[in-house]
Amino acid sequence: MAAQFGASFTFKDWQLNPASGQLLLHYHTPEWGDFTEQLDFPVVPDSRIEQLGGALTVAIDCLFWMAGVSYYKTTLAQDIRFQGRRPDEDQARWLTDTWQAGLAELAVANDLPWLDHIHISGEARAPVTQPPLALAAKTLVAIGGGKDSLVTIESLKHLGEPATALQVGQSAFIAEVAHHTDLPLLAIGRRVDAKLTQVNTAGAFNGHVPVTAINACIGVVAALLTDCDSVVFANERSADVGNFQTTDGRWVNHQYSKSLVYERQWQHIIKHHVAPDLHCFSLLRPFSELAIIKKFAQYPAYFPVFSSCNRNFHLAGSQNKTHHWCGQCPKCAFVFLCLAPFVSPPQLFTIFHKNLLDDVSLYPLFDALLGLQGNKPFECVGEAAECRLAIELLSQQPAWQAHPRIVHWQSVLPAMPAAQQTALMQPATDHMIPDKRQFQQVIGHVA
Image 1 (tube, rainbow, N blue to C red):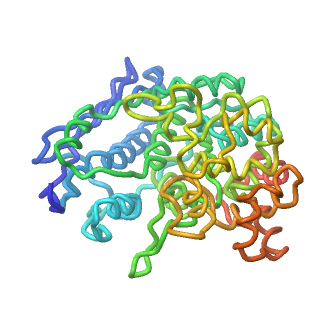
Image 2 (cartoon, rainbow, N blue to C red; image 1 turned 180 degrees about the vertical axis):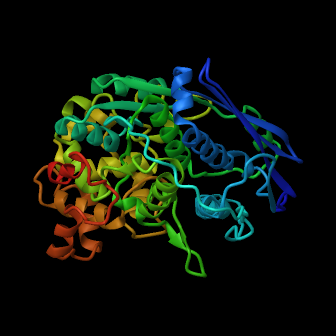
């Protein structure tokens, strides 16, 4: 397909079957026809559905609208239509901002400009503030199988917070890691329309979507159904740093829907449209990736089972057949480099099955992570400054300081001031951790 945008995209409707917990989301494009996504939520009594009333309807509307991005991206249509309820102006702004910024990477991959034509028109109506729902003091904590969610889970356990691990999708790998946390697991089935694979092959636009925004919407619906007042994610402050700026100064950020900007906007929607006593936030927002990895190194029981490598997660199943790390992607390189200062070389090599610093083919990738060439990789990786501090720390360790790559990088990287090193490892004060129960105590625990 040439770079030509579709004529229209239509939000058709959604149906929730309380007897099965099945939620169906329906969309349409003239080019590719109908799409249906299926989510499987826990079955709850009819009385719970009635008790939630309008709050549940709004939460599902938000999920319906946000999840539509997976199908909208096939044509990047000029006109966005609604057969059923339209978002109000507040919700429309949230959707427009998230779709524009969340699809910016897809635009780059398809040689397209910033997608300014994405504009969701909100309905002007008087705001309706939902009353508190008196939700129970319990937490759903998102788990993806990586170091960040495990540090979050261990922090909640340390604080004595009643928590349930929340898994979105059917990954056997995530379920395995969740088992090792000893938390109860709530798995929400998510099945994107199989037609997506067909239309991608046929020439549809394809690329990255703001999946964390979708998962946050799923988490809020799940929290309402299961009577939890908090949905906790493990997004670090490094997620705020984009990959590169466009010529007009806008940031293309692979992790936009993990950023504090997104989190603030989503919490505003929850507070004013769903339930003021429900919070969806990142517990690790104050911390750099390097500080989180340093904390993770204190949990060696997870070393054999965790992984941040995204090749574990594909529509066709895991592409890592022998173990959980491919040893070739930006996530593998980043975690290897930043974990190395805090664990012994034998532990590190056991996790990754080799010394990634000995792999010549990875040197350009490490150089990109260090900010020496190219842009920050389009992956959930930390800042170049964190990687440079990891090199500085390794240069001080006998086991690493003579390694040719460490010697080389030390010779070409500028010295990092002590104040900057300290700041990278200290918690920031800008976050959305609510001032309730003991959540803010995690700052001292992780630091």
